[in-house]
Amino acid sequence: MNIVVKPESRLLYEGAEWDFNTLMRVHDACAEIAGEELGLDWYPNRIEVISAEQMLDAYASTGLPLFYRHWSFGKHFAQHEALYRKGLRGLAYEIVINSDPCVSYVMEENTATMQALVIAHAAFGHNHFFKNNELFRQWTDAKGILDYLEFAKGYVQSCEEQHGELAVERVLDSAHALMNYGVHRHRRRAPDLLSEQKRERERREHDEKMYNVLWSTLPEKASQPAARGDEERRRALLQLPQENILYFLEKSAPRLAPWQREILRIVRNVAQYFHPQRQTKMMNEGCATYTHHRILTRLHEQGRISDGNMLEWLHSHSSVVMQPDFDDQRYSGMNPYALGFAMMEDIERICREPTTEDRQWFPDFAGCGDPMPILRHGWAEFRDESFILQFLSPALMRKLKLFHIVDDAGQPVLRVDAMHDERGYRRLRRSLAKQYDPAWQDPDIQVVDVDLGGDRKLILEHRVASGRLLEEQEARQVLRHLASLWSYDVLLREVDPVSGASLREHAVSPPR
Image (cartoon, rainbow, N blue to C red; front, side, top):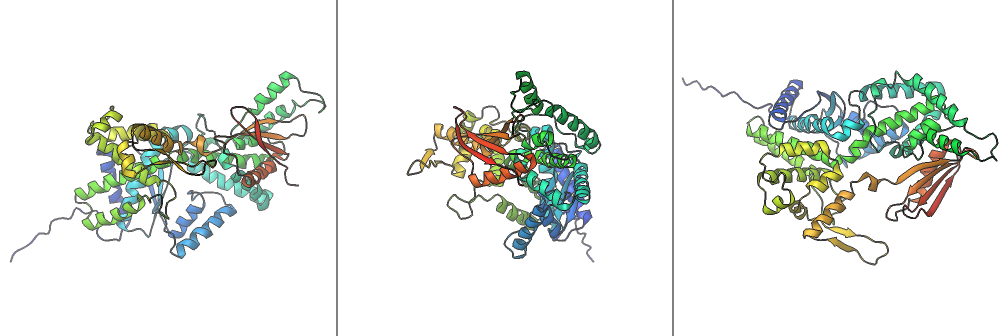
């Protein structure tokens, strides 16, 4: 009798089924490659398995499952659920939270291979980016965000019990409408979210004291002009001009109750948490996609996932990084996964197999052999705009068939403004990077003055860029929310940044 000893399988799993031991084995295998071969540095991981309905709920609450209640979240949930049930929309395989420990929510419906993909993608790719990118290090408090979200949820719930759901809802509606104008865009100290709950009473007492000092600068009679010293003192106390409108309202709105100011603070802290993510979407997804591609490819080379598993995750990967052509019905701009992954792969190519053109454009790292130090440096020190300006190569522009169209409403035809030549490459790269510049994406709107001696009208200015005025109806809707919080009239002037001339004005009164 011949006895055949079956060799021990090195596979991490077999088939589509998985259990928590499988997830642990996959995590440890990914960690080995991420640490030893890619040199990544990440927060401790916490992986939580949730259902499709819980994933839909997380969608609705801006990707934060632990959040306060608001009617808009329910509306979004109903929309996503209807499309999902009809088979018109799939669900994300994961949601990851920038926290310490880093929390990755994975769907229980995922196969074992998809769990491996999302662990490599989120628990190591996104996690490394969150921990090391300078924007996240400066602007977010990864250690405090989970506790702060729990505090925010409890605080809003207590306000609903004390003041009524309708009153709280009105404040949240207005705060959410101004959420994009509730962030500090210039460097400041990252908020210490762990101390927010402890300092709530102390902060309220301080704000009320400052409020009393501010309004004491009013002249005895409205007809008397304020002295120059009082005017300067008033503007200093108001910190004018002020780009963070929610911050200004929290500190200076004359009729807000302390609980309303705290809700504004909660909303703007959440807005500040998301601010770096808006500036690094392409890089963040590119980093995570490149990471999962490298890790899973290496696991296959080591014989730890099968050929069938390899084909399964490659099918999903290919769908994620697909970039529709400009004349495709599915086209909606540059796919951040596609552009990000393509740039990471192109940097690897330049490091390993550079052309003469690559050496001319990237003399500092072309042909260096190892792409990981270059990639890790890029992931840490850049945002989308500067990353494109620094690393987008002519070879990739040709591969993606990029071109620049000038759409001038004053001209009868479109004009191709950049071709594939030396000057065209640089112009094309600048034009693409500009689309990722927050200063170009968001209107420059600031609080510039308050008529404290008169009708207390709040005055804002929009510095118009490239002649792009605000959409009138939307601007008035947002200003109504602003007037509701300020409690007096609001005036928004749209001005030419060069001449200072007023181009248009929007005046709104608070609801009666």
